[in-house]
Image (cartoon, rainbow, N blue to C red; front, side, top):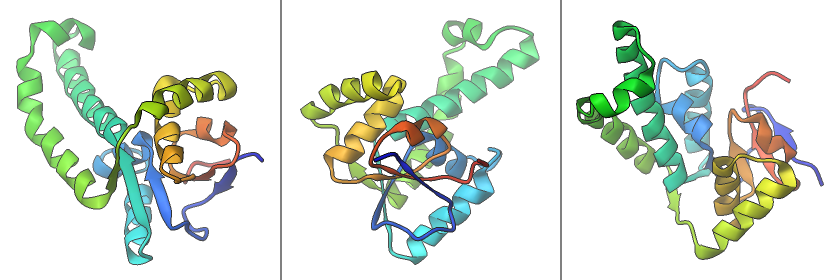
Length: 172
């Protein structure tokens, strides 16, 4: 059974996993779909949906914030952001308050799902079967391991996964 695509206005499932793309757009007000994701998060709360996430969501959110800080500094200096990575570890230190604030916000808004040992094998199966990148496969594997099959995401790749429900605001 192919994935079911739903808009942010469609009926909600009891549990919805926040994929990293959704969490990033929700947490960072300069992201393209911030308003849509923020509004959907408020709707989930109002309708008593349990939003869930994992360490992978937090990891990708932190990386996104750090990469953006490095890119901004690299533009000023006229270099590629990867050149600054080892030269300017102080950017990590300076960015940590924002990362920790967004992490706390995510933790307050979602129920944390731990990655079990079985998740690794399932993630690699999902990668092979649906041509998913590792982080996407891990998100799906963690959610499915805990009985959650609905995802809030800005990642169309999840639409390839059979048997899941994908909430997105992306155009068709």
